[in-house]
Each structure stands twice: as C-alpha cells, then as structure tokens.
Amino acid sequence: MNVAEVVGRTLARLGVDTAFGVVGSGNFHVTNALVAHGARYVAARHEGGAATMADAYARLSGRVGVLSVHQGPGLTNAMTGIAEAAKSRTPLIVLAGEATEPRSNFFVDQAALAEAVGAVPLRISSAETAADDTAEAFRVAGEGRRTVLLNLPLEVQGRHVPDVPGTSVAGVAGTGTSGGSGPMAVPETGETARLAEILAEARRPVFVAGRGAREARRELEELAERAGALLATSAVARGLFRGSRWDLDVSGGFASPLTAELIRDADVLVGWGCALNMWTMRHGTLIGRDTTVVQVDLEAAALGAHRPAHLGVTGDVARVAREVTRLLGDDTRTGYRSAALATRIAGENRWRDVPYTDESGGGRIDPRTLTIELDDLLPAERVLSIDSGNFMGYPSMFLDVPDERGFCFTQAFQSVGLGLATAIGAALAQPGRLPVAALGDGGALMGVAELETVVRLGLPMVIVVYDDDGYGAEVHHFGPDGHPLDTVTFPPVDIAAIARGFGCEAVTVGDRSDLAGVARWLDGARERPLLIHAHVSRARGSWWLEEAFRGH
Image (cartoon, rainbow, N blue to C red; front, side, top):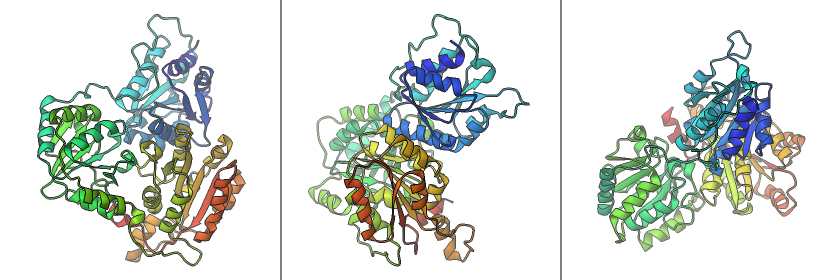
C-alpha cells in the first residue's frame, strides 16, 4: 500500500464512517482509500460547503468529522468553514494535499493557514510513520476536541509503506467518537468542594450549559435537582434540557423576557462548558451585582476569559457535576424551584407566548407569524440548522427543537452563508429527523450551489428563506443614522424559481394563507426538498439585533 491508501485505511479502522469534500488530484487517492475501506464520501459543490457539512456532522453525530480537499486553493476555499470548526472546538480532521515546492502554483504555507484560524497543523512525515501520524491526528481531534489539518505532501503520498510492526491503531479509541478524556479532565478536589459549598448556600442558583456540556445532561440535571437550580443553555447547546420543567431555554440575546429576568436575579450562576461571553451574558447585563459566578471548563485558560469568575473549576463537566452531587449528599434543596415558578415557566417562557403586534401586510409576512405557523406545521422530530443574519433569532427561538442533537448553530465565526451546508451535515448525522434549514436571502444566495447537493442526496429537507431583499443586519444597524444603504440592499430575486431549477419544490409566501403549500408537501411523499421563499416584513430589525451590535 502507498501512503495515501494507509491514511484512508487507518481512519476507517479508527471508526470514521463519513467524509465530505471536493476531490482534486491531490486528495483523489486518499478519498478513494477511505471509501474502499467502508467510509461514505459526500461530494459537495464547494470546499467551503464541504467544511461546514463535516463540522455539522461531527457536532450532531458525536463522531470525529473528516474533510478532504485539494492542496492550495482547495484548502483556501475551505478556510471559513475550518475557522468556524476550530473556533467551535469541533473534532474534525482536514485531509489536504500539500505542495511543498515554493514554485508550485498550488504552494501556500498550509500549516500557517491552519494556525491562523486556530486549527492544529500536522503532517504525514514519511511512509514509515504514515499510520502513526494519522492515528495521532485522530487522537488530537477526538480527545482534544480540536480541528486538525493533516497535510499530505504530494511527494510522500505515493510512497510504498513497508509492513512495519507497530503501525496500528492500538491505543486510540476505535469508535470514531469524540472524547474528552484528556489530562485536564479530572477536577481538583479543592475546587469541587468549594463549588459544593457555594451551591449548598445558594437560594436562586442557575446553571448555564454550553457546548462543553452537551454530553452531560444526566449529570447536570441530577446536580440541579439536588441544588434546586434552574437550567439554561448557550445558543449552541440549545435543547439540552428539553422536557425538564425547569428548562429556561437559551440565555443571552435570544433569551425570552422571563429567562432574562430569572437569570439576572440568580444569586449563583454556574457556567458549565460555557464561555459566558458577551452573547450568552448580554454583555454582562444578565449577571446581577451580587451574583456569585462560577465557571467549569476542561481548559484552565477558558476560565474567566470573558467574564470575571469568583471560582473557576478545571475539569470535565460530567465528572465535576458527579463529584459535586456526591459532596452535596442526599438532601434536596428547594433553591430557585417552586410550583408557582414552574407554572410561570410553562406559560411564559417560550417566545411564542410573548404578545406581539403582527406586522404582516403588503405581500410580506411577519417573521414571527411565519415561524410560529411553521413550528405548528413541521413535525416535532426535526433537526434545525441556522445561518447568520438579522433573521436568525426567529427560527432559533420560535421553532422548537427536540433535544441538543436537534439544533446546529454554526456561529462561532459569525459568517453568513454556512446555513445550507450546516443543514446537510446535520441531516446526515440525524437521518431519522426532518432537516430544516433557516436562511436569509443573503446566505441562501451565498451557499446556493449546495442546493444541488441536497437534491442529489435525496434529502427531504425544508429550506426556509427569510427574504428582506438585503443584508438586514446592516440595513437596521446603519439605516436609522441616515447612512446610504445602496451597498446592502438588492432588487428582488425569485429564489423559489432558482430552487426549482435545482430540482426542489418551492412555495412563495407573503401571507399566512400561502403556507397551505407547505402543508401539502408535508402530507405528500416528500420526494424532493422544499424551499419556502418567504417575503418577510422589514420595517424594523429583530429584537436581539441592537444588543448584538453593541459588540461591533
């Protein structure tokens, strides 16, 4: 076998079951080797889309994702998606051919590109070490929850690999799953003891769980029950506590008025695998003047990085929660919980329960009305993926999700245009659910090439385009000050017609009655994906936009 074949075989043996990419000469053989050894290959229409598909697949499957790209432009085309994955600590391996000759048209410093966006650059250094180098990349991605660029030098890929004893996958978890059992996973005894003391004395504790807590629902709910804590999440972990009557849903700019009130009034706030950044804490306004702030994270460097904490606990979230529960003993504290508060949460906490004035009219539908209607129409077993833009709060908060595997929020880099590719990766990771992509018109047109991928894969996807004929965030941020908006507004585009050209079914919505076409599609065979081209009202920005732009 040559090096490219060994790399593909090793990853397959380690449990990699799906890879995404765009194939060129530099990654042709390694991609075929993955397929030959049992992995599914999903061809995207652009490397940027492929990167985001692999990212979303890893997030919602719990497995190490794999992206395969050509050297040079194949990698640079994928860099926005790789940056998003790296910032999100997605366990992802990027297989990239590498031109090492500076005079090559394809030459760029690929390792430097990876480092610039927070990914870990590694390289297949020789034929003799090819299997071990690949296994190390898998270990760093899975155990370290990192995005890894594994460079495959062109002059090395074709070399014959001797049958060297020891080049095996022994010692590396062979399930393809992302772990978290690194050296920082075991908490310090003194830190957990102090957290137990704080919770024992708390009267109104609130837990906010982030992406680092998505595998720890059972442990956090058991501790919250013992401490009398309410439960909330950052946006990326939305759905983690779905079904609990103490679930406040998302903390931060998306928080409902009741959620914001209850978090602000907490006397103890614990962030579990959560950065407590300006988005999740509304620039700190959700932290009361006398609130004790605790942060639990796998990495010590994350503690207090965005917000001063009275206590930082370094360790794996599930392990910390289990230990603190043990230290609290068998007594269950009332804490923040009461029958009256449970009634308020049940009746007031969903955004659809908050009264509003419907601004539909003139051929445009209020995005709140649109999304509430869709929430009632679409089956509960769904997987929702969100693009970036002014619109994104509406699907994020007015469409319910069944659990943390039902929501994919690729927003760490805040790039417009990732939403459709996100939905493809999420759909393949959760094949038993209806995939729903929520896009703005700007993001839909940026990622439009991947409509062909949706159709080719036969995904029964619902794609909702919130169309306000422009980049709404900029329109509503700069427009009130009288700035010219010619650079961020556009003439109408028939996105429904474009979707039909790719092979989708499509309906155009300007009024509630137009949603009858969605009901017909749902009641039918769903043989082709459905695009909903919604002309949404645009008189004002979304409720969270003013708060969000304070960070710019």
